[in-house]
Image (cartoon, rainbow, N blue to C red; front, side):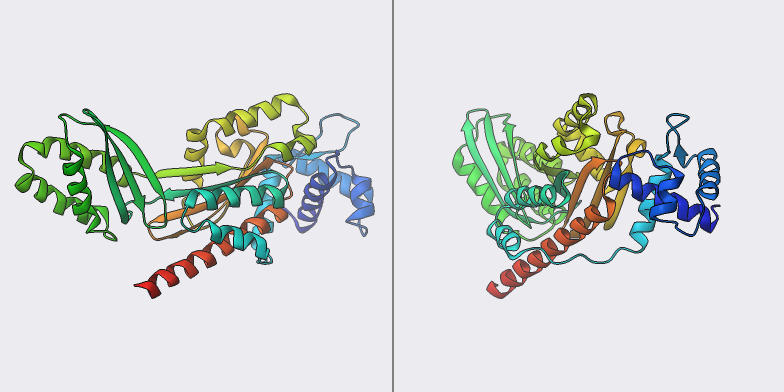
Length: 346
């Protein structure tokens, strides 16, 4: 358990290191933050904090730098006292509204905005939750043994997959199956599947096996969790001193290239609405040992929207958290407006 004075010293060290990137000495803290404390007193507290695992001293004559444990305490403090950020600019809101019929466009726009606001790498994702609601399905015959399956979920998420057919199906049969499904638009997949299964068994006869194959493909899309992910440009990181080391930059670039691994990380940590901060080795991903990931998420209409920022452990957490709060709130407000317009149309 830290004393009040140790907490003051530790938070000051983390804040100063985030601001300067330089090893922090006791004289710096005494002059800038803890003017009522002597450098000798602060130095003794820093030595104790080092023994407790909150600080490290790279060299005997150097100051100290925070560990992941220190960043965790600092972030928890930031989260306790965070205030809602300002609303996003009108241009951003208008840009998102322009993509209201295309989730991919909205996510791309959000990831780019977060990159700009944070000066790191922004991310935006939508994870389909179990029992998503259908909007529309199409089956398009490609050749005698394949058809293209297009699925649009409530909220505008689009999935597509090429499916093998056990036997040749005409486009007419495929369109008939699609019409049957689309009459049940707005229902959860579990309800739709039971009705379709009965229709296939009773009316499609020799085509039943092929249609059941289509249902299995739909199951794979609609019953599991799937994540559509977009990331902003890496160019901001070129100006971040922490990534001047080419090894660190390559490590981060490699994980950003592995979309499935990054999506898995987002699903694992963005499971509940609110802010989640994963620092350094807490990520359990070796490539991110020198990075932090900040996620903010909210759920509605069978899907979870997750926004995030990846940057160095020495990131400006207050700025990043404020940016995420700001953008996520505007996305939520715009989604409410769109749902209201759809309701009025009905």
